[in-house]
Image 1 (cartoon, rainbow, N blue to C red):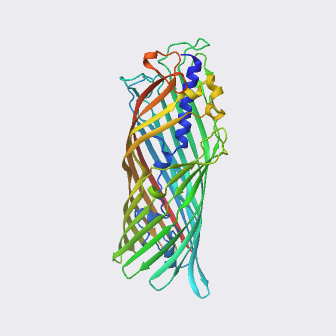
Image 2: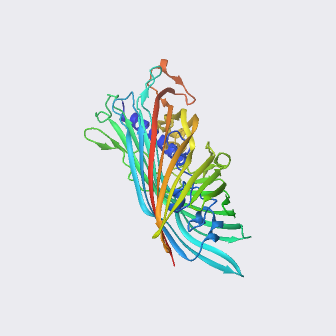
Image 3: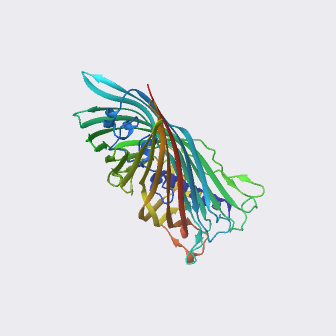
Length: 518
């Protein structure tokens, strides 16, 4: 196979990777769809109860759950939370062909250890009316997502897909709020509050492509056989946004209820290309292969829909509390994804892509039991919640890309951008929505001026994906019986391969919370 043909195919694969990375709906690499957009508040007490806290918020974390509950605090205090997260993700695929692609489970471990939240809470009186106010930092999400687009077998009933490939992407980082909130009373039983959050955060996105050409035994112009091509790159991500929440709470003798509402807002992902991009043809001797320059300064905008939350708590007795929350995010109706898809001109206007995301319905349940001793108070907490993802199992996905546009001989018939971006279309159907389940446990010890609390959270989910890749390849020298004349007046052949995989993710999060009263 001629080197120019390999370069063209490699170029086409790179374009598939670029398109897939830019388009959140692309098959197999739906990294934003795999993230957990069920943002929850801070604090080990709330997390130990599964996050069932909207109706009982009455400590330093209330500003991030239900700000109305801030008024239930007493005194001036500082609270801080340290967290440690471990993520174990596996991609399980068993290719039939070609022989050189991996057949084992590819796993990735990620850990994050940091001060995840801190808040200062104090009373404030304005015109003889009492308020409680707080300023806080809260990392609402430890971002980790991984996806893969893998061609792993040939279809014996069609033309052999000559160059299978494996494209993978990963995203790791965090999204955080820097905010302020207040809570006050309307009556002795009714409270209201609000918060305002500046959204920030950072992360790293990486891509890798492996192009296998071992089944071609022809020589390139340098009389050397083509083996494979590897392509990698990395980009830094900065998150930006602004949102606010309005809240209310009602509290009676043994029970309480809370309501929160967050209007829709825009989250921006700013990508700065770092490299190191490595384009290699494995041969003897090895020689670099330049393909396409990478995008820089790319923007993505995700329309986060409005969120409505309702929660309640009931004291069975003085020491036993049960709580439940329901939260709704209307991604299906309001979700929208905008991105820049021109690597040559990254300042180009954002393109809008309607999402195929699901709505997020989250239910959180929690129990707290207090055990009193002469030397202090020991709480014991358990909880459970679902953490649904925006996407479902991907089945019957079909991706088509047109390698003909990359032919140098067609330069006079193309715009400059066509040298870099090839036509690509995707279609497919989604199965049941991916549902992760999180189990929680918490405890601690409370003294008069110091409270120590901890929480453990265990989450896991898996989903399957399958589909077909179709490449339309310019083929002047192919057998006329196996090709057809296309709209360019040249022969083209249609080659395709199948891909399938199973994704598993397990996550453990440990939180240690300190609260000190002045």
